[in-house]
Image (cartoon, rainbow, N blue to C red; front, side):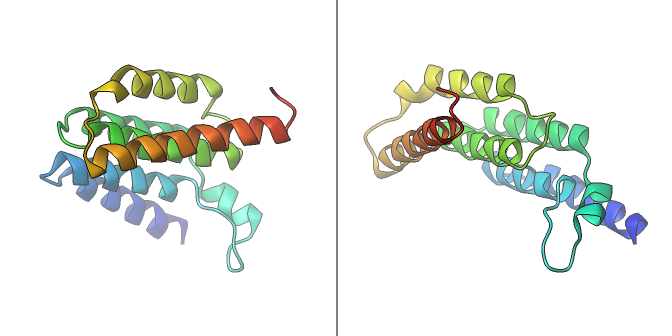
Length: 147
């Protein structure tokens, strides 16, 4: 039922926020964002999915994930890129609250800090992940004729 779904989503979000590790907290909160924008599948119709979708709660959830990532000193930029990918996913899924300004703001934030990445495996992996994300955005814009 809708009441049970809302209780489950609220509890998952609350428990995510209580995790001790900032990195785990940021990832968990970011993953909870999918609970506020369920996709359609074989068992869930478009109508049912729309009933369960809460765009404002989704944005708040992603903003809390960014705040948790900002408190993390290790892998901070990697977390920012992961959260950027969540924003892009919801933007592409048609969540109108996730606008271009959020995407641009997060890209600017990453650009501002990416120079801090060292030449470790994690740093290289994060750079590649970010470059692949930007390439995805470029390809999407190109295919939609929005160059």
